Image 1 (cartoon, rainbow, N blue to C red):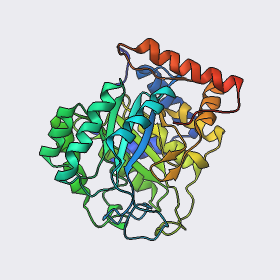
Image 2 (image 1 turned 180 degrees about the vertical axis):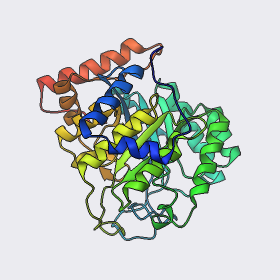
Image 3 (image 1 turned 60 degrees about the horizontal axis):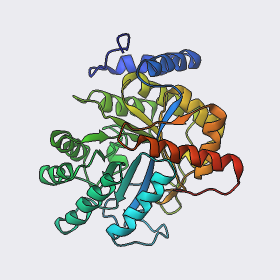
Image 4 (image 1 turned 120 degrees about the vertical axis):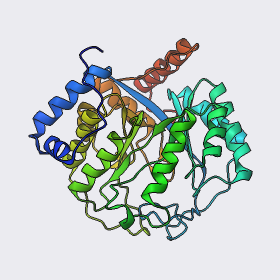
Length: 347
C-alpha cells in the first residue's frame, strides 16, 4: 500500500526502547495502524503443527521437554512414516489450515533422513497446503534439497537475545542459528523465526531479540512469539511468570518493527484467556497454530479457536490457489459445525 510505513533494517536500541516505553494505549494504537497498512485486520493465518520425530534431542535447550538432557517423562519416537504425515496433513486441511508445519527433534537432519523429509514436503505440497519444517541446523546443501522439494518456510527460532542466549542453550551458538537462517534465505525459502518470552530474560533481552529479527537483511516472513510453557523436569519449570501486558507489548513492538511479517501467537496460548488472545490480535498478531498440541505441549482445541474467531469477527486467512473454493468451503463447513454441535474435528 502506498501509505504503508517503510520496512527498516536499522533499528537502534534506543528506538526500540522508546516503543516499549510508550503508554500502553498509544503503543497498541500505533501497532494497529501499522497492521492495517499491510494486512486485513480481521484475518488470521492458520497453521497446523505436527511432530514428525519426538524426543531424545541432543540439544540442551532449557525450555524444551524434548531435550535428552532432562527427564520430563516424554517418550521418544522414531521418524513418522510418510503416509502417516500425509494423513495428518489431509486432516489439517479439512479443518481449515492453510499451512502444515512439520517438526523433528534433531540437532540437524541426518543424511539418511533427508529422502523421507523431502518426500513429506512434496506430498504435502501436492495437497495444496503451504509447507514448513523445523529440523534443527541446516547446511547449504540440505537447505537446497528442501528448497528443491518445494518447502515454503523453514522455522529456526533465535529464541532470545544474543546476550541471554548462553543462559538457555550451550550445545549450539547464536551464530549457528544465524548461519542456518542465512542458508535458508540463500536457498530461496522463506524464514519463520522468532523467540520465547518468559524464560527469565530482561526487558533489554526482549529488545535485543526483536532487533536481531528486524535488522536482518530481509525480515522473516513469519515471526512466532512464544510464551514459555513451563514443563516439569526442565530447568525453567519454576521460572517466574511473565506479566501478560509485557507479552502484549512485545507483540505490538514486533508488529511495528516488522510491518509486513506475519506475527504468530504461538506456544503458550493454552494458558491465555480469550481476552488476552484478543488483545494480542489487536496488537498485531495475525497467525496462529491450531489443533490440540504444539509438538509436545498443549494448545487450545480447534473449536475454542473457532468460537473465539466467531466472537471477534475474524476469518482464517486464505491462500490464493486453484482450489480456493474448496478451501473456503472447508472453512465454512467447519465454522457451521461449530454453530450446530459441540463436537468438533481437531487438526
